[in-house]
Image (cartoon, rainbow, N blue to C red; front, side, top):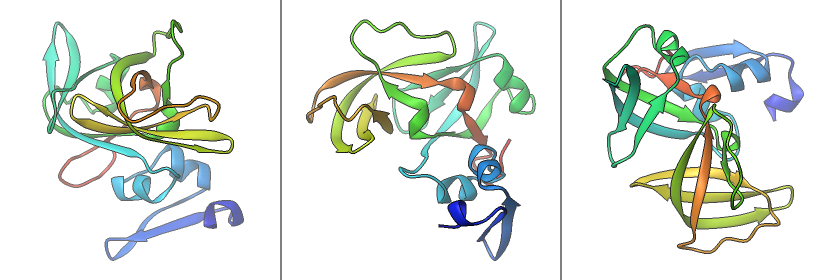
Length: 173
């Protein structure tokens, strides 16, 4: 409610005020993982992993799965020069979409193969809970599309919208 009623919002947690700003600022630029998790429905996808360099590029190996994600060179700056170590990645469901068969993908999107676990058509959008190499990801899809448990899908992940957080403190990087 606060996102639709107030010009400025304060998010409280961890014994105090965590962040104050407009709804858009808090949603698009959360200063802490706690803030990112409080805003948006469905909730943000949170993935813990380990950064490493490979072939001159930066990648993240997901902690509890076989998934490895490549990061665009610009993310190196956002990660404050980190080239290794633990990091938590946040991806909002609206930045993960289920591709149509044969659909071309822009260069800022990574394609992941996933399996549908749950799909709900909710009016203007559909919500798909998928599993990608042991990692559960929530994505949005057209409600006109129909998916069943076990369907294989291709997911396009927009890496321009990644949120990075320190794994130990939750502070945005």
